[in-house]
Length: 232
Image (cartoon, rainbow, N blue to C red; front, side, top):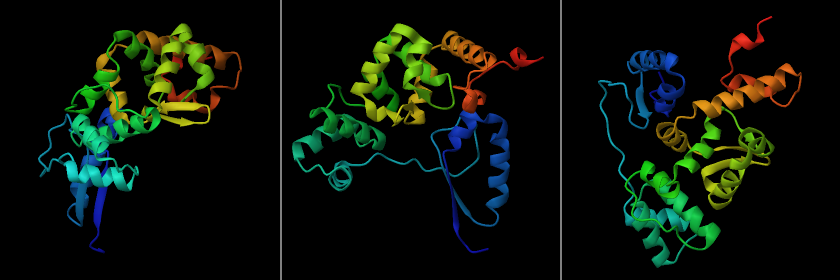
C-alpha cells in the first residue's frame, strides 16, 4: 500500500537447510508480488522457477579499486591489481584475498579464481583437511574451541592451523567458532561424506546430556540427535 520494494535475501538458504518451508516462501512471494515489487537475492536454486532473473556480475577493476580503497584502506596499485587478478572481482573472494593480505602482508599463492568453489579448492587441496573441517557441518550452531579436541582428537592440530592461517573464513566470537559464509558450508557438504564424524559428535553430545552435564543443553537441538535415545 505504501509502494515500497520488498527485498528477500538468501532464498537458497531456505532451500538448502529448511526445505520443508521452501514452498511456503514461494507461495508468499507469489501472493505478495500482486501488491508490491519484490526482489529476491539468492545463489542459483535447484528448483526451477518461472521468474524474471538477472545475474549479478563481478566487479570490474575500477569498482574493485573503489571497494579496496574505501572499505579496506588499501592504496597501493600493485596490490589492488594483484587482488583483482586473483579474485576477478568476485566480491567475497575480494574480501578473502584482501583479509589474507592484511593479515600476512602478502597475497595468497593461488592462481586466478573463477568461482567461490575453486577458491576453497585452492586453499584446501587435500582430502584430510576437508574431512577435518567438516566438523563445523555437524552442528547448526557454533563449536567451542575446547570442543574441537573433544570431537576430533589429533585432527584438532590441522583445524587450529587452518583457522590461524585463514581466520577470515570463520565467525570467531571469543571461544565460539562457526563458518563465516554459507558458501564454505555448501562447498564442504559437496566434497566429503561427514556421516561418520556427525555420528561421533552426536554420540559425545548425547552421552553428555544423559550424564546430566550442562555444556550442550543450550544448543542440543542444533545437533542432529536421534530422539530415540531420550525416550523413557
